[in-house]
Image 1 (tube, helix red, strand yellow):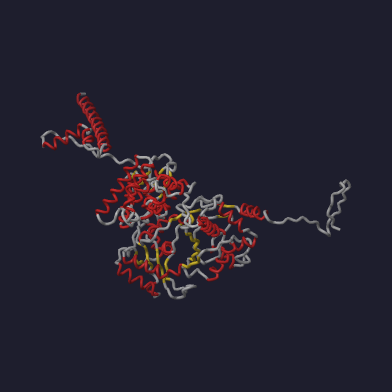
Image 2 (cartoon, rainbow, N blue to C red):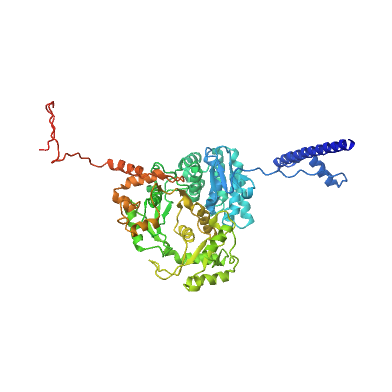
Length: 640
């Protein structure tokens, strides 16, 4: 009995000790939070330190022999709801209160496409989600600095350059811009004018002749007047109107493409609005209203939009292709931009000149006239040089693993035995592959990305392979060809494409697309995805449609029962009805299976507007009708 009572006492004492330890830990955390929140306040902060921390510091300072009291641990990081690289802000606050500075820096450093913009009506400010669950960064200028520092050399120029003096000067301007936030707009504008006017007499920007974070922070301090209505307000405040150097500086920054794109991204975060800018050319004066079903193009600037439609010349266009090309054409025309039709002729085994000519003819049938027609084969030598650059920089390697084994290794996330080969050995095998020799046939070039990635397309995809089939344009000049995965991001960047519209089936490959552009230090292209067009009980596969043609089950590619552009055209599709139907589906990511009855009903509506209708009576088989109560003065047509 005594032993049992002693055990119970010991257990109760242990529980009490645990409770006391938990209370002490909670108290320490609370004290640490107070210390962290008071950080940077000097003596006032130290005066408010908890007694435990003060006594510990005192004991340490005096070298006393008292039992040391533990200093509270640092404040725990606040958990964030944001995913890594998500920038979140409220779409209902004024433009100047959105992360316009951070967006501008992201665009200037060619990294903005790495970040996802998220609309959050509950936020009072803006925040950026950090990788590895490290919380978030809050505040426009803090995010801007982070983006610039993360961007390497390009970001360093935004922060002032390579010298400590210039960096300090930019920091000084940013601090000055931040100090103005407590004043009203008119006072801020006049303060910036008095400060900048003397400097702008001999320079274009605050730091001379290059745009830096200093200019963008000051521009945000005066309300970020990039839109027409905002600049009109500034002109009303400045005493000299458009004649003062500061007004010239504002006009210069407001017309900068990066500033306009940042404005468009900030304004269009909720997908229901777009910014209007001062026109640089009469043709950009007024954009047409959005067609029903369409959405605004993310970051679309009038005169700067370039879209592309990259068909492979391995078959005839079908209505699924029609949606893709019509969406690209619509955005190019609405934003006064350009449409590039580029034939992706990287696989000579499937391509024919016949298909190429048919695609051009079919585009004309549906009213699409590209601004330029190009070919990926025109860039074969350029793409080859980029592949060599990747080899020299250990970003790619040569592999002769059999296809089935390679597929198995990728599924099991196992590295290839050649993954760690030297650039010299890889270059030797690459030249062997390109020579067309039989020994080079098993070899292919693979990107060295991440074999343990959850996204399967990032597990060292194939970029180059041997193909001895003569090319329909370049003949036998090349014995090895790049894959679409390598060629597309390179040529998109070279040709100035601003928006790559891709179907949702490429979602996994978008990360790979961005990796290649980032690795090769290319101009980044914004990707906008939409759902492909599917029809119920309809075959869209070019391989299967070819089987129907080759086996004689249809009269040809223009058979009215076929879902090809030629087939529906022969059946009587109206071009305007086709455009309206495709655009009514919009650039939505939601995949739907359409019914042909709706397609033809839309066509009938359009034709009814102008079709003449006639009613007739058969002359031979008609039945006489005698009217006995006809009113005088009414005339009737007769078959006699």
